[in-house]
Length: 323
Ligand SMILES: Nc1ncnc2c1ncn2[C@@H]1O[C@H](COP(=O)(O)OP(=O)(O)O)[C@@H](O)[C@H]1O
Ligand SMILES: [Mg+2]
Image (cartoon, rainbow, N blue to C red; front, side):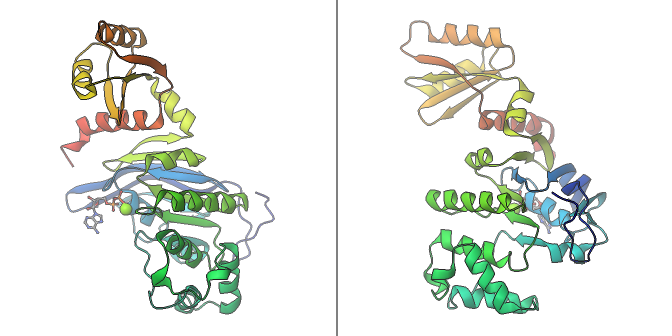
């Protein structure tokens, strides 16, 4: 990003990070919901924020954009201080909350116009036209929102949070409950936006979406367990994985897990994954278990999902019961 880009207040955007937060903490009552979360999102990057329900994604996002004050920790969003500058952050960030609400009996255009009025935007008509155009909604502008499919509603939600041309989008589970085709379209849209230099932090609990992000962070029980590119995260755990095809995989899974060298087994539909850090012991276990059985076994690349399950089970041992 060039240093000639200007923010709304005329100051140049410093080279650096769209989001840069350190050691954020938040407790609700005696529940430690966000625990020392540090995270960096580079400009123009699509950053995936993954984790199961209740892991602290929404709470973290709200702290990152200045809507919720952390108990401790600090950081910046688009160079603005998350504790002090929430007004400026609001003006420069597009935040799509988990439950975007719109009027079912208004058209797409009317809904966008309504949002623009709430935010008292100047040049409302122009802003709405631009958002309709840039998200491919122009030809549907006069359709009633209530009749739209989930995918088009998500696109409307995205248009609504882009009316003020934000440089950073914070999207909180935008594809939850959206069908696979619409999810694919939505991700293509995110990549088009990123190509225009817009930074995106997107939370999801769909593992397959991780592969579509430039960088990822994985959170469970309020703790960030991994951060980096998918390849970096996979490499960091040094797990080897075998795929096993055959009958009675659940019983086999139990048997394998009791064997030395097998740190984890997961059944994915009709295939069993067995992973471990001691590669030789793992290979020996696979050989022993398949002796005299009609199983097909093969070494495969460890996937992100294997790694996330591995990280999650380790943190669960330490934090799961306590929180
Ligand atoms: N305002 C609040 N008061 C009390 N507990 C909350 C509040 N907001 C969130 N929580 C709790 O904090 C945990 C993390 O929530 P959240 O950040 O919404 O997770 P996620 O977005 O990953 O599903 C959950 O257990 C949730 O019930
Ligand atoms: Mg959430």
